[in-house]
Image (cartoon, rainbow, N blue to C red; front, side):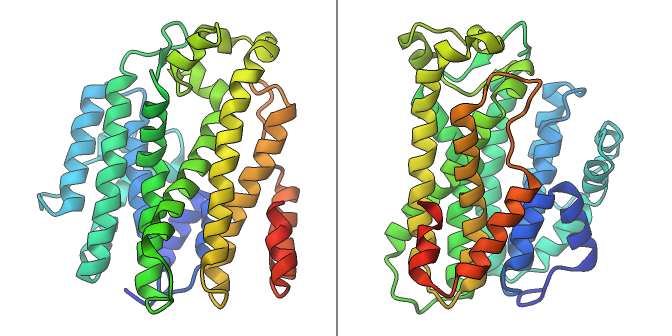
Length: 333
């Protein structure tokens, strides 16, 4: 498996469960596609279990822990996720659970060093999913549950995506540019902020949807310091009142992504595929922030999202301008 492109069935499944990440994955060199693709596939599998709202949180926690044990190699008993699979409204997510054992077999076939990196990142991701299941058990639009502090939000974004930046960097470093003269501690710190920035953009964009599921990822203590309560966020008419508070987090997300842009430009210039795979989500994230600065971010009826046409324009510009280093760096200005 190492050094080869994605297997056809894995590639097809990834395309069905996430078209946006699939584009990023396909541009990566074949030496890291299988490892990063499989890690994402397993993370989506655990996420699907955690998000099956029709199933009681206790049962989801049991299934999540059982899958984590299989990922870590602590248990070899095959999983039966059939009942959970039948609860999925999306055919792709149902297939994801049904093919879980096949994904685990691919993990077992990896070289030990790659397998260890995948296991490390999945351990952190699943710990975050378990924390979310416990934190938001019983939450609803009528019974909002909010994170408490900025530290809890920072921890959440690390467990969901900051750790992925670390994993991505370690895998690419080992497989693609092991001899490049890079400061690994700086590179990993930047990678963590890169991942946190992407997830914070998701939090800010998906705020109306999460609130209606009873989840408020914007912390309550800073909200109260601004004279606000989580319930205020449910009403689009309160956008003006909430805007100063919300902009603080938009600025934080932008700062993280600009560190991610520094990270991208510090990678060896010869690794164009990895640089492009980093550039696309950063530039899409920055464009999302631009839209969130002017749109009503509390309006659940009108989701703020970068258009497919704009995504295509971003991708084309990164490819066209890559030969000119100065112009390419200015893409994030």
